[in-house]
Length: 224
Image 1 (cartoon, rainbow, N blue to C red):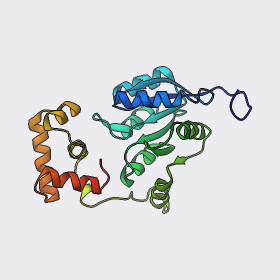
Image 2: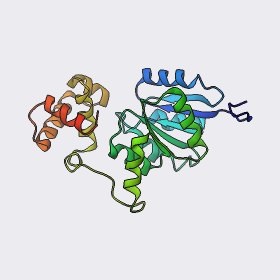
Image 3: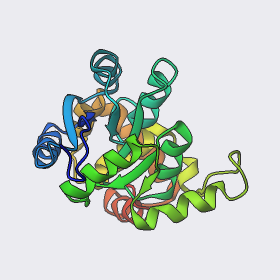
Image 4: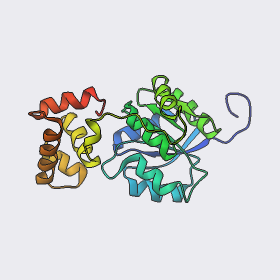
């Protein structure tokens, strides 16, 4: 029996995040609300997510926005057509407007940041499963602004950030987190030389001089 006195089965949840330690933490937090949610599976990449969602048939997918092989938007693109009843709730460290808008346009029903508590996350899962949108407080304004002129209005953007390719953003994000070139190469499954090429391109486009300036630039735009 649930906390409101009704007999409802827990919402079946599938976790998608490229950090195993974080997935373990989410599992532990959600385990404190067994009457509300049940974690049925997890994945650490886009490919694993697509296969796992098809296998476990969850009601709600907790979806990381940034992953090395395409991220949340790619999962949405590959899954929603075949599994229209699955609901997606983005769970990300990023609160950047462009990230929020991208996954909402892709079909996610809500977006919460990783500062959320376990109980709040369980409640958010139940809300989106019931058909209600859920956003962390400061993120709702991004969505309202972006969609105020209709569903095809342009997303909020940053002209300088828009100059970067998706792969350049991935490299920059990891660079700003303190990753060495070799670690970035391993995370993104590319060569160190390719990482160097992307960093050089980002430096040229942003007209900055070194990785430390790039890190500040990325942090100011909430890419980290």
